Amino acid sequence: MITRGVYSATCSILNDDYSLNVDATIAHAVSTINKGLHGTIFFGSTGQSQLISVSEKKDLIAKIASHKLRKKFFLGTGCNSLKETIELIKYGFEYDFKDYLIMPPAYYTGNTDKGVFNFYSTIISKVPKIKIILYNFEKLSGYIFSPEAITKLVKAFPSNIIGCKDSSYNLFESLKIKNFLLFPGSETKLLKGLELGNSGIISAICNVTAPLARKVFDDFEEKKEQTQNDKLIAVRKVFDDYNLISALHSYMSNKEGNFKNLLPPLVLLNSKEKEELINKLNNLNFVVKDNLAA
Image 1 (cartoon, one colour):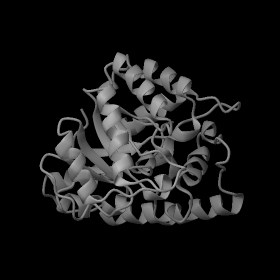
Image 2 (tube, rainbow, N blue to C red):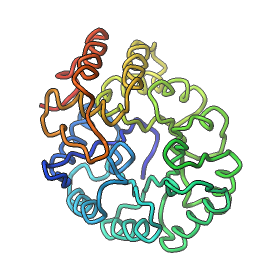
Image 3 (cartoon, rainbow, N blue to C red):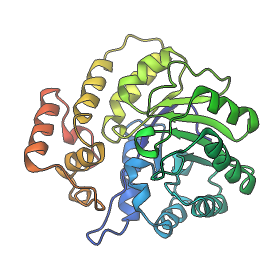
């Protein structure tokens, strides 16, 4: 089960025909764990989850089930369809994957607290042993969780709703629920969140900041002086100037060509933006070769 720590919303790597490269996607996730992450979450928004087919997601689930690091692998669903969400979860359960990061369906406006409650309660009714990390990201889903809405879900399903990834940042400073995991979605919130009682982070940029983020987390846990937090925040702020998926893949493709493919409508940064990104990171002494698997 997912616990306190530093996690990536890991990247999905594609072949030239836009199919999911399962082996390369797993290898990348492994490399970030080996660089310090407590785990990785496949098929979050950074993993292009809404754009990848259910069948390809199942292929990856079947492959990671026998991996030696499987206990550090977690899953998002990334499906707007309630039926496909439940189908994918049930498939994961066949391989004993029980923890899922789940965002309310996107696209349709007018999501309400009642509707979102019904969405999660339906999933739980079909898969009673599921453990859910709520995904709070208004920018993508059109819905923002309030502390009251989350408290209601936890009260109704205390053994199922175990945590929240807060990428809207309206919860991590104020939500207080006993034995509830709370993960801001940015390195800029890691240390502050830990000081407030949060559980760590789940972040797109942990795909490249794994050593720095883990150092900040460990130094907090061990009550040591912080030496890397300023750099970690500075790196995140550089990436925040761009679309995160485009910037990550552009950055990583500088060393590993298999990151060059993105599912349309996503695109890489243009050459000027990419050069600007690399120069900004170099000025922080943050170098590609120090953060990517060879």
